Image (cartoon, rainbow, N blue to C red; front, side):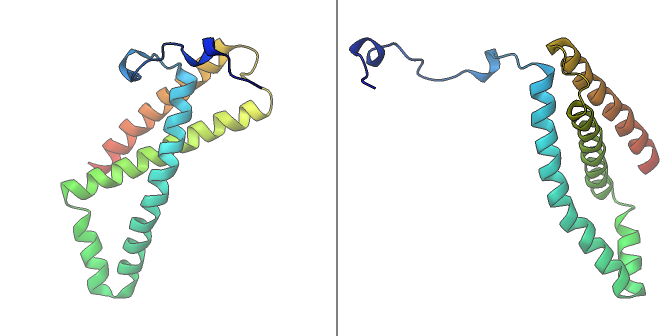
Length: 132
C-alpha cells in the first residue's frame, strides 16, 4: 500500500492534552480495575511480610500489633482495603458482563460502572470507620 502525498502532509497535533478528553465511566472503571490489581500485587508483599513477622515470635507479633496503632500504617492498610474492594466490585461487574448483562447499550455499561464505583465508595467509608 502506497502512502499518498496527501496523507503524509496532514497536520498532526504536536501533543495530546489529556485534560480536554472526557473519558466515559466505563473507561475510568477499566483503568481503575487495572490500577487496583497492581496495588493488590504490591500489597501482597506487605501483607506477607506482616504475616511472617507476626508468626516469628511473640516480639514480632507485638511489633505488628504496635504498627497497627500508627496513622501512616492505618492509611496504607485503608488504601489496600479500598483496592481490594474496588477490584472485587469491578470483577463482579466484569463477570456479569461476561454473562450478558450490561451489554445492550453504552448507557447500561456506564450505569454499571458508576454503581461499582459507588459501592466501592460505601465500602471505603465502612473500612475507614472500622480502621479508625
